[in-house]
Image 1 (cartoon, rainbow, N blue to C red):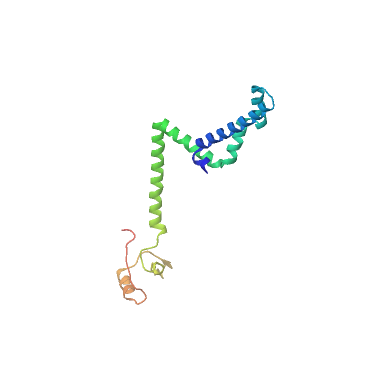
Image 2 (cartoon, rainbow, N blue to C red):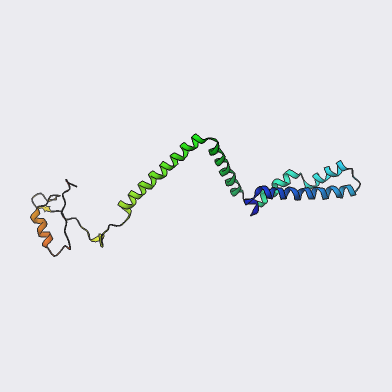
Length: 166
């Protein structure tokens, strides 16, 4: 876990450990009677290449997608700090886009998604007159019709409105 949070410190410890193993292998080769140069060369061959071994160990101890994410975020931050005008334009574009989306969602939520501010919105009806002579319903009703509906015991409450004024 420390390799993810403090990669430089962990790399330093890895280098120290590999240097220790390389020195121990070199010492063993020297004790077998090899020259200093030959002992170091054989020790490197025995470990299989120090850099390749470091890469393999680094890959084993890390979570690749977290490393890539950390590298990408770091690159993005460095790029933003390097190009200030373009960064300001990008940030302003994101701010406007997020603000517009939040505004539209708030409007849709208040108009379409939230329930009506009535106790029983499922009991609200629109009453339109039926004209027998034409066989059609129409949006026009008279004031006396409205008063009759209001006095009727079939409705709890009545409200009249004019669609052309609304």
